[in-house]
Each structure stands twice: as structure tokens, then as C-alpha cells.
Length: 393
Image 1 (cartoon, one colour):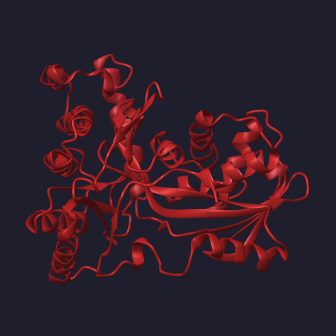
Image 2: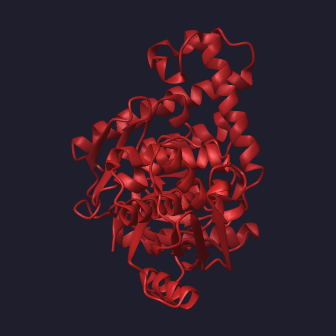
């Protein structure tokens, strides 16, 4: 069973960040700040429709070792790219001036400065166990760890409740990725043993008990190894389709279409593709609410069919899955998973399956065997429990 794609065994990630800082800057960091990756238990493409999501933080982490540097200058090194990137205030203040992975760092500086905060110059070194491009929110992990570091280093007066919106602004307005608020909220506000029930309109959150351990369950995360196929353009297209449909229906967002009125709403739309998109979002919001109700009642195992229904909706109505993720879901269910679904924006990425703890290896092997039969690259797998959010380590 391969685990390399979802967490490299390369030593402790915090120690790697510290070692990188020492090697690059020849001194000790002032501190280290860690932010997790996340998986979304259920609620896909509902966030930008002002709907509901239910993510949880992962034990995989991105760590930033940092210290203050010259005023108005920021230097960042990552173990993914040995060449450091340096930029000044003029580049930080102009979205798009810094590109590549360093744009996520510059974007945080920009968002803080745009909020009127005196951001300290800094030297940063980044190490991560959150895989890039797998739908586990590696970008939000970088943004959140950098944000925590700069807030602490500068003694900035920024309540934690504001952090998700600042990190989202970095990604939306500096990097140019049209993500919702979910990723940053989960990464920053995650709580061990809980899933984060987020109302994406009001930004109200509730920590929902998700005690897998007590139920004898775990979540098996499968890195499909599928390359993201046209993900950015397709994501933007889905978002625009939802916005157009909301305008046609005369609502602020698709969240405002009640499930009981779905058939009537669909009848008002002109084409079948738009109807399918709307049906996914409206029914997915309801699945989130149903999942939350079951978890509040302690019925963890019973959420499985909702996860599977979510995947079918993403596959058939929202059309964002690919053969690798469909194969992983089908194999996991055949091997005894209580439910399984793709997680993340789609067109590649990861699958999660709700499994009995003692069946995790069996399910993982079944997925690997199904991949081998289809000629796909071997998947990566990791069994996880909900972890905590951003912190200083």
C-alpha cells in the first residue's frame, strides 16, 4: 500500500522547516507555525453558492519557520524549490507581480497590507507534508501558516475570526484563484475530533463531533494520482453557470432554492446542463444538513450513504469526476466502505472513504488492485482522523 502521495516519510516536517531556515539564512528562526491540509467530508461546490460545507483538518501539515527581516522585504524558501524568492513592498502591493508557489506568500502580505496592517519584513522557510495538486488544500495550508507567522512576528492585532477571509483574499485577489471561504476556514479553525460546519454566507461555524475513533471508524484518503485536467477553467465555468442560474431564478445564490421547491426551479431553467448543475448544488446543501444531523445524534456510520450520493451527484450532475476517482469510489464501496466520495474541486485529486478501522487496509488494497486492472498509476492511501487547525509549534 503506497502512502507516498499523501505524506512523504521524510522526517518531521517542523524539523525540515527549521533545517531549511538554518541552511538558507545561517541563523535560527524566531518560531515555527503549522497549518494542516483538509478534506471536505461533504459539501462540494456549495461554498461559492453561499451554502453549507463540512470539512475537517488533516494531520498532514505545512510548517513555516520564520524570523523578521529587513523592513519592506520578504524572502521565502521552500523545500519544493531550492531557489528562494525575494520581493519587496512594490511587488507585494501589485497582485500578480509574484507568481508560482511564492504568490501564496506574497498574497498574504498583500492582504494584510491592504487591511491597513504594518506587516514586518521576514525571512521564511517552508516544508510540507500536504501534497500539491491532490485536492487537500495545500495552498490554504501555506497561506494560513504564513499568515500566523506574520501576525505573530509583527504583533498584529488581527482576531483569528478574520484570518480565513484574509487568507481567501490572498488566493482570490492576488493569486487569482476563485476559491470560496471553506479551505481557509477549515485549515485555521479545525478542531481535533470534530468537523467544521460552516455557513458560507454568514461565516458562522459550529464544531460538530466527529469521533471516528469511538465508533471504530476511520477515513481512508486515497490520492487518485490523476492529473488535474483543465481544473481551473472547468471550476470557473461551474461557478459562472451557478451564478447565471441564480440570476435566472431571482435568488442571491443557489443556497436560497429550497429542496422542496427544486423541481419547480429546474422547470424555469432553459437547458439540461444548467438544471443538472443546480440540482447538484441544492441537493448537496441538503446532504450537508442531513450529515450534520446524523453526527449530532452520534450516528457516524449512518452518514455513509450520504457520502456516496454526493459522489454520484458530482459525477452525473456536476460532471467533475474522472475515471481514476470513480474507480477508487467503486472499489472502496465494493470492498466494504460505508460510503465514499471524491473530495475537492474535482477533475483529479482525492477520494475519501468511511471505513471500519480494521478494514482500512483491505479497502486500500482493493482500490490498488482496481487501479492495476485499469492500468492507472498506483494510488496513495492514508488513514486519518480529524486534527486541529493552525498553531505555533
